Length: 105
Image (cartoon, rainbow, N blue to C red; front, side):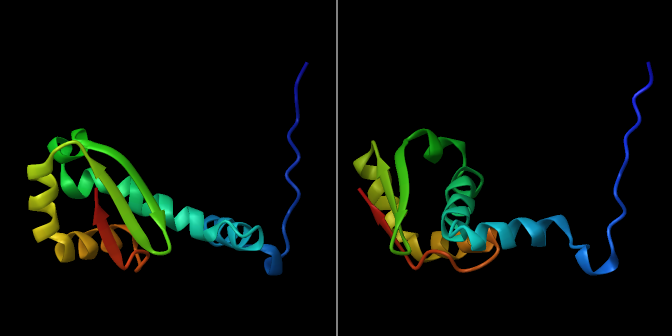
């Protein structure tokens, strides 16, 4: 038995790039902020590297501030000196400014 797949042709006014359609969907349902937050959180390991990521216990964003819980006081101190560079790199990796501050705990 053969299965036929019928693809309904779209008119030109309905065609959108997939990324644009997904972003529109997220905006409509009020999820764009959470999506942007996840872009920053997912960028953490590539930006800071495996060693620092392994010492990271928790990451979350609240009111444009990234909260980072670390298991090392020395690492917390070292990262606080590089906070402005981390802010720049994380926002750059996310594609736009999502966070304005980082708090290390």
